[in-house]
Figure 1 (cartoon, rainbow, N blue to C red):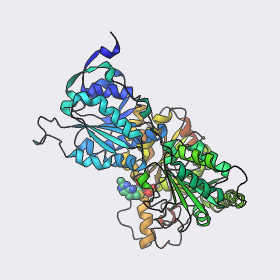
Figure 2: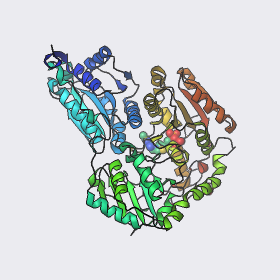
Figure 3: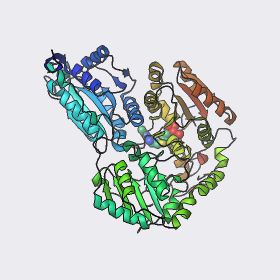
Figure 4: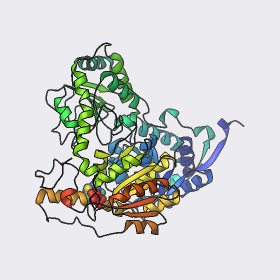
Length: 579
Ligand SMILES: Cc1ncc(C[n+]2csc(CCOP(=O)(O)OP(=O)(O)O)c2C)c(N)n1
């Protein structure tokens, strides 16, 4: 009998599982309930990797980080009602950051829906604005078609999360599927799917502007990773001698150690904003030019032409006037631009402009040495990041939580190779991403590549239960907890805006996170002295049999917590140390 006329009489839940298998999904994260039980049973029977998480929000964070490492859709599931509503924060992270994800939610049996069914909520309405698309599955027999649609939407255009909302009767109901209905379109298994080229006339205009520009710059966002456009970017930057600045999500666009790397631009700039002020052409790549990138829309200099390469056409011109719109996939647009440029010598001033990058960065490092090499106790966070720079391999990945972890990590961590080696949840900047994000990234990276997570104590308090998951599933990352006994970012802002001592609801109790980690069966080390950092990090990186939690006691002085000036605070108190 050929596959085409074999009949599979299976539940909707099994059809879902078989379709996910056809899409070659990685580990799935979820927490079950009655509605999706047939899906769970099919995962078991088919041998799919599915992991119980302790909180659905953390499931979405883990799936999001997994997707950032692989560019393939992360998969998460939740039961109806509270399970579904717990997905919201993670879905919005992926939506805003353009990360492909498929989320499956159980929903009420339609025979009794809206008769005060237990745990019932208007979850479709709650979830719809939190995702790129919500697909309500009304017929068991349509599951193959709708799963394919979910992957096509998740991976194309600006990728994003797609929710498949599956009522109980659809998941439990049976249908006679023809075996050849279970298939996946190979073009939709990962981002960037369905690449588009820019308008050739616009490419010519961009090339003409670039050919005569004396001080051009590339400003790069997270789209560079989604597109996998690193080689095309480097080829253009090197051939044309163009300095590259990036957002936090765009870190790794080119290696931070590259002679053309200006580091982060926008609110957390070191030297990049100064170069932007001198530039005569800005080429923006895969970046929304939002609040942080533009220093609350005050950064982009008037009168300097902007070429905007962006996959979502309507994003162009949304915050910043664009002179040339390359509405396209970043990789194709960058390579088309390079091809369209005239051969021959570059304008003379280019060498001076690009040549100034490395000495300026070196000078900045000298100025920051008091933090990077600080011997103070409690530990200076700059010293911690510097020790990670020394200890981590080019292929390793740093995952940073909201709060100071993202801020300090985005600023000071040096990627040594192009690619997504720094993952921060800048789509929504929720605290609580660090631990589950490190788990998802470690699952994606495999045991040979090491993942280090950074989290604040507040963010860790939110999600500590997920170290139980990490231990159970073998996500043996190293997690550094910035133990400052505070909702530190908030306390530092209160200090800067209202003055010393004017703190409200920003202190946390003292907690021994190393002991807590040991209680979960993980390796836990408390690090109180800067001299102990290097050894503790090495010990964590060498431990591939359990997660390692480093409880790092960092500064408790709110005057010294911010690594740089935050432009929302009008006055910066004496003692703040802008980097
Ligand atoms: C879910 C969520 N709630 C509130 C905030 C606002 N917020 C930003 S940083 C911060 C402090 C976080 O404290 P902690 O996790 O201990 O990190 P620290 O800043 O001290 O390093 C808060 C509350 C947020 N980003 N996300």
